[in-house]
Amino acid sequence: MVWTNDDLDKLHTLGLISIVGRDDDEKSASGPAPAQYVRTQDPEWYAEEAARLHDELEYRQTQLRDYQQALDNARSLTGSTGGIDLIGEDFAITPEAGIQILRQRVMKEANEAQRPGRPGPP
Image 1 (cartoon, rainbow, N blue to C red):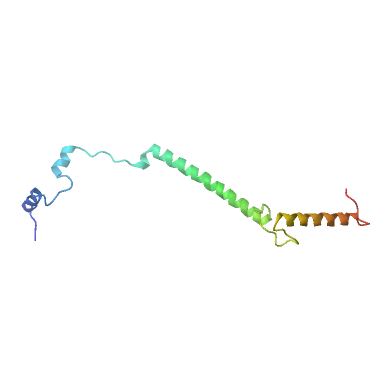
Image 2: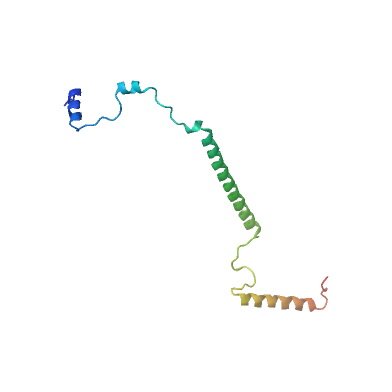
């Protein structure tokens, strides 16, 4: 089936069809279309974008420094973050056990210092 302009006009007057947009006559009468916003030509957009990217760069550089420091600490075994030393001779799980271990170390060092032939403290 082919629809003619007269058929479309009849449907339009009955409210069965709607036409979206303007006719060519209406376009020419309204004048030139307003210029569209192009954000890449907006200096304010560039300033906001530069500030945002600068903040992100600072954040990522801080993260990178933190990661590098953590790697350096891991390589040199410094800056440990707690836990139990299972490699050493003794370790304490409770504060009381830690105090007992420290007492034993002090007593051992005192006994070694009192042995004959061992130089005294400097």
